[in-house]
Amino acid sequence: KKKTALHVAAEQGHAAVVEYIVSVTEGVLNLETDSLGANVLHYACLSGHMDLVSFVMKACQVPVSEPDSRGELPLHWAVRSGRLEVVSLLVERYGCKINTYVPKRVNTPYDMAKAAGHKKLAEYIKNKGGLTTKKMEKKREEELARDIPRHLESALAINGL
Picture 1 (spheres, one colour):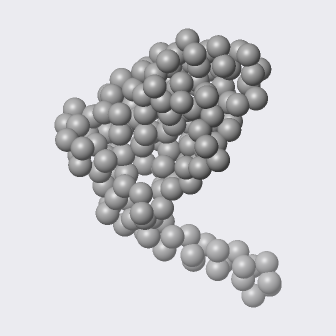
Picture 2 (cartoon, helix red, strand yellow; picture 1 turned 90 degrees about the vertical axis):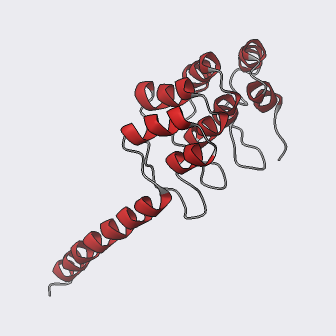
């Protein structure tokens, strides 16, 4: 699937065009994804325009935790833009979790910010509890190790053992 006009307008940061398309289409395109699995919020975040991201969150009702086909959240796309105000908007106003688990092939927002040289953004993410990919994987392994005994206990109890 190719990008819709809504995706392109959001990616280019054309807030008035995005508002017009949302109005004219009565929301039909709001949740559409492209070949990358990205929706209008991903592209609004990539544009780096805080007002556009706010409009999309309110008008399009796209979940802030909706991943693209790689597993990247709109937060990852916002980090890619390098705009601290967009990242903080997603985290502080819309409740996006800094450390949502993503597949191994996807870097954490903290790693992305560091690798791109966005020092203030990386510092903000770290101060909000952002983890490196390595620490995230270790945390995930520890959680799985804790959960396995619980699953075994409940399976044994269900089977009367």
